[in-house]
Length: 142
Picture 1 (spheres, one colour):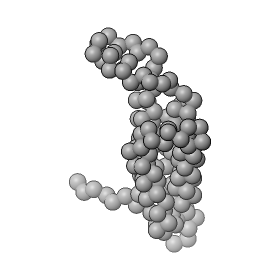
Picture 2 (cartoon, helix red, strand yellow):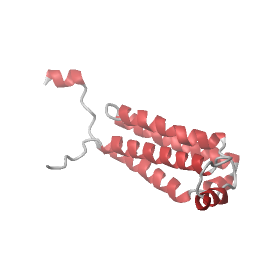
Picture 3 (cartoon, helix red, strand yellow):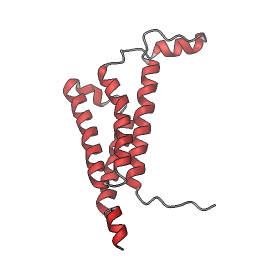
Picture 4 (spheres, rainbow, N blue to C red):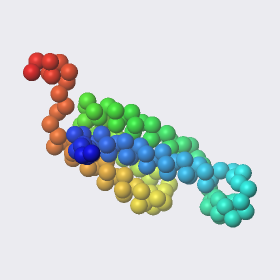
Protein backbone atom coordinates (compact mmCIF):
# COMPACT_ATOMS: atom_id res chain seq x y z
CA UNK A 1 0.00 0.00 0.00
CA UNK A 2 1.41 3.34 -1.05
CA UNK A 3 0.68 6.66 0.63
CA UNK A 4 -0.94 9.18 -1.65
CA UNK A 5 0.43 12.70 -1.49
CA UNK A 6 -2.13 15.27 -0.42
CA UNK A 7 -3.22 17.41 -3.37
CA UNK A 8 -4.59 20.16 -1.14
CA UNK A 9 -2.51 20.51 2.03
CA UNK A 10 -4.29 23.74 2.99
CA UNK A 11 -7.49 21.71 3.30
CA UNK A 12 -5.76 19.21 5.58
CA UNK A 13 -4.32 22.02 7.71
CA UNK A 14 -7.81 23.48 8.23
CA UNK A 15 -9.10 20.09 9.36
CA UNK A 16 -6.12 19.84 11.72
CA UNK A 17 -6.83 23.29 13.17
CA UNK A 18 -10.46 22.23 13.66
CA UNK A 19 -9.39 19.12 15.55
CA UNK A 20 -7.04 21.12 17.79
CA UNK A 21 -9.68 23.75 18.56
CA UNK A 22 -12.33 21.16 19.38
CA UNK A 23 -9.96 19.08 21.50
CA UNK A 24 -8.67 22.05 23.51
CA UNK A 25 -12.17 23.42 24.00
CA UNK A 26 -13.58 20.13 25.20
CA UNK A 27 -10.64 19.53 27.52
CA UNK A 28 -11.09 23.05 28.90
CA UNK A 29 -14.78 22.40 29.49
CA UNK A 30 -13.97 19.15 31.27
CA UNK A 31 -11.39 20.81 33.52
CA UNK A 32 -13.37 23.99 34.29
CA UNK A 33 -16.70 22.39 35.11
CA UNK A 34 -18.38 23.61 38.29
CA UNK A 35 -18.73 20.20 39.89
CA UNK A 36 -16.77 17.40 38.28
CA UNK A 37 -18.64 14.19 39.03
CA UNK A 38 -15.65 11.87 39.15
CA UNK A 39 -15.39 8.96 41.57
CA UNK A 40 -11.60 8.80 41.76
CA UNK A 41 -10.36 11.13 44.55
CA UNK A 42 -6.98 11.69 42.84
CA UNK A 43 -8.60 12.73 39.58
CA UNK A 44 -11.15 14.91 41.40
CA UNK A 45 -8.32 16.69 43.21
CA UNK A 46 -6.51 17.14 39.89
CA UNK A 47 -9.57 18.68 38.24
CA UNK A 48 -10.34 20.98 41.18
CA UNK A 49 -6.73 22.20 41.29
CA UNK A 50 -7.07 23.64 37.76
CA UNK A 51 -10.32 25.48 38.42
CA UNK A 52 -8.98 29.00 38.54
CA UNK A 53 -11.82 30.35 36.44
CA UNK A 54 -15.05 29.41 34.80
CA UNK A 55 -15.77 28.24 31.28
CA UNK A 56 -16.83 31.55 29.73
CA UNK A 57 -18.64 32.45 26.51
CA UNK A 58 -15.23 33.08 24.93
CA UNK A 59 -14.24 29.49 25.71
CA UNK A 60 -17.46 28.25 24.11
CA UNK A 61 -16.71 30.38 21.04
CA UNK A 62 -13.24 28.84 20.85
CA UNK A 63 -14.69 25.34 21.12
CA UNK A 64 -17.36 25.80 18.48
CA UNK A 65 -14.97 27.58 16.13
CA UNK A 66 -13.71 24.07 15.47
CA UNK A 67 -16.96 23.44 13.58
CA UNK A 68 -16.30 26.55 11.48
CA UNK A 69 -12.84 25.24 10.60
CA UNK A 70 -14.35 21.88 9.58
CA UNK A 71 -16.71 23.70 7.20
CA UNK A 72 -13.80 25.78 5.88
CA UNK A 73 -11.86 22.56 5.33
CA UNK A 74 -14.60 21.32 3.02
CA UNK A 75 -14.82 24.72 1.30
CA UNK A 76 -11.04 24.64 0.78
CA UNK A 77 -11.44 21.70 -1.56
CA UNK A 78 -12.95 24.02 -4.17
CA UNK A 79 -11.88 27.50 -3.02
CA UNK A 80 -8.57 27.06 -1.24
CA UNK A 81 -7.35 30.64 -0.97
CA UNK A 82 -10.59 32.24 0.26
CA UNK A 83 -11.08 29.48 2.84
CA UNK A 84 -7.50 29.80 4.14
CA UNK A 85 -7.71 33.60 4.29
CA UNK A 86 -11.07 33.48 6.08
CA UNK A 87 -9.75 30.91 8.58
CA UNK A 88 -6.70 33.07 9.33
CA UNK A 89 -8.93 36.15 9.69
CA UNK A 90 -11.23 34.34 12.13
CA UNK A 91 -8.29 33.27 14.29
CA UNK A 92 -6.73 36.73 14.16
CA UNK A 93 -10.09 38.17 15.22
CA UNK A 94 -10.27 35.72 18.09
CA UNK A 95 -6.79 36.72 19.26
CA UNK A 96 -7.69 40.39 18.87
CA UNK A 97 -10.84 39.90 20.94
CA UNK A 98 -8.81 38.21 23.66
CA UNK A 99 -6.33 41.10 23.67
CA UNK A 100 -9.17 43.60 23.82
CA UNK A 101 -10.93 41.87 26.72
CA UNK A 102 -7.86 41.15 28.79
CA UNK A 103 -4.30 41.35 27.37
CA UNK A 104 -2.97 38.62 29.68
CA UNK A 105 -5.29 36.12 27.96
CA UNK A 106 -2.89 36.14 25.03
CA UNK A 107 -0.24 34.50 27.19
CA UNK A 108 -2.47 31.65 28.35
CA UNK A 109 -2.00 28.77 25.99
CA UNK A 110 0.70 30.65 24.06
CA UNK A 111 2.20 27.45 22.67
CA UNK A 112 -1.10 26.44 21.11
CA UNK A 113 -1.80 29.94 19.83
CA UNK A 114 1.61 30.13 18.16
CA UNK A 115 1.15 26.64 16.68
CA UNK A 116 -2.28 27.47 15.25
CA UNK A 117 -1.07 30.82 13.92
CA UNK A 118 1.83 29.15 12.13
CA UNK A 119 -0.44 26.44 10.73
CA UNK A 120 -2.90 28.99 9.39
CA UNK A 121 -0.08 31.08 7.91
CA UNK A 122 1.27 27.97 6.18
CA UNK A 123 -2.24 27.22 4.86
CA UNK A 124 -2.44 30.70 3.31
CA UNK A 125 1.05 30.40 1.79
CA UNK A 126 0.26 26.96 0.35
CA UNK A 127 -3.06 28.22 -1.00
CA UNK A 128 -1.21 31.04 -2.77
CA UNK A 129 1.28 28.57 -4.30
CA UNK A 130 -1.21 25.92 -5.40
CA UNK A 131 -2.77 26.15 -8.83
CA UNK A 132 -6.52 26.79 -8.78
CA UNK A 133 -8.70 23.73 -8.38
CA UNK A 134 -10.38 22.88 -11.69
CA UNK A 135 -14.16 23.06 -11.69
CA UNK A 136 -16.35 20.28 -13.03
CA UNK A 137 -17.26 22.29 -16.13
CA UNK A 138 -13.56 22.77 -16.91
CA UNK A 139 -12.95 19.03 -16.52
CA UNK A 140 -15.69 18.23 -19.06
CA UNK A 141 -14.16 20.59 -21.65
CA UNK A 142 -10.81 18.79 -21.56
